[in-house]
Image (cartoon, rainbow, N blue to C red; front, top):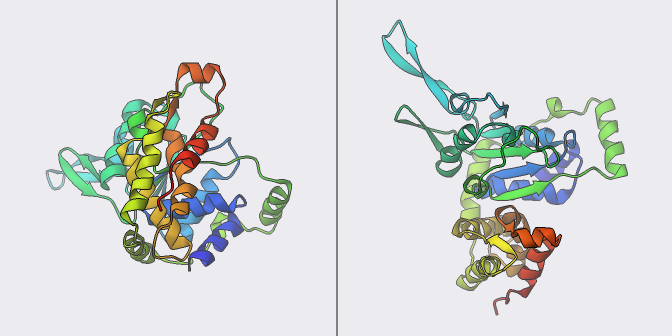
Length: 305
């Protein structure tokens, strides 16, 4: 079922298989994704294709400087017929939500996503509203435009399980993309492979994948290495360790195993950790490569026996 789903998504989103796999890892482990890439590389296509492939309700929020928190969470409208207030759903009330160009809106509006991402609910006028399940936020941002943008604060960055970068496609990929367009193979024609109920069942199976204490300690030790690295302002948070463990369980499940190996932790660690870590000013001046540092720290961490 998983391989069929991966193949189906790759028929419409032309890109690296690793990106699709990491997307499914986040979906099946209850995480959220930050997608980074220049305009036109398929970020929206990837999110829409995923939603339709798993038959989930899809919503898109196009963030702009004048987007309000009520546009995201919803608001209460006075009903003159009943004499009471009624909740009017916001854009967040979908199973898979594309938060497009999230760094173009104000910090107040960005923060309106925090409760939804952390607790699966939103609160309006003191009343809690549960979000549909499964629930996943896929946020996008442009890595090269900074005018008129509001960088995400560390507290919100930490809510994303993974950050994935979509680059320019290879020649063969771009040619296949063009051929798909000419043949009318677009996101409008995507059919479902599994259902939302199937996703919920898979999430339950993923959470029951066995991970031994020594492997959990290994994941924690990787995070500790980033905290002791002098070239980093901040190391990985305890939430990062939890995400690392959950992502490792999903990785093992996708690989067809019911137990987690240290290799699973190593495979997902760069995607789980990199966006949560900030280089010091000195490291930036020295043009240190954050990805390279993290990879070296992972390989330095002692493997469990």
